[in-house]
Image (tube, rainbow, N blue to C red):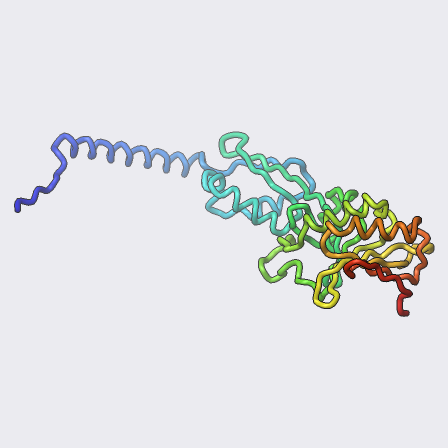
Length: 273
């Protein structure tokens, strides 16, 4: 068998040599220009709006090689934004505004609800991200929506809502059933209870997930409480049945406990002090 090996022609070799020569010259010119004029250096980052993130935070997370070659920062901009978002309750969007110049848009996260868990108070965004309500950066967020809802108290006997050891930072991704919690609040609003409930307690009863609604008493403290199913689809039927027993929910005595988790019946009794 005759083996045939391909070899470049004389013309191809000549063209390849010319290409390599021009490539070497271009690389040399670029290297010389960069050394003398720093044409690829990072010239600036315009923060919009200013005041939420400090210059130290924005510039302190940039790698030295990215300062020398702004194209590298552009190629890794998503990772750069994610690194900052892990420590601050913000969404970031980075874009080019000129040669070697960037614009960094800073959008504070909006809490969808407040939660008490692990002995601390937290804010929870609609996408499931969670952070302590005591962070100083919270002065820039709009928490009116979350503050208007009853506090969610997540019991320790429930599944842990966030793994604090999963990553470094101040902002974590929770495993909370956010959509379900929103439906609890929508049901309370439909029943006319939202402004009368002090907090919602997500707990366990006989191995099943349940929800307690703790109402205000006349002095603003803890009053009557109603135990509901974890499934928001069952709330309307139970709620309407309670309204037949107590047409005015605010007049339920503080020592009354109502359990709607039994199938086909509602249990009303005095709370054990």
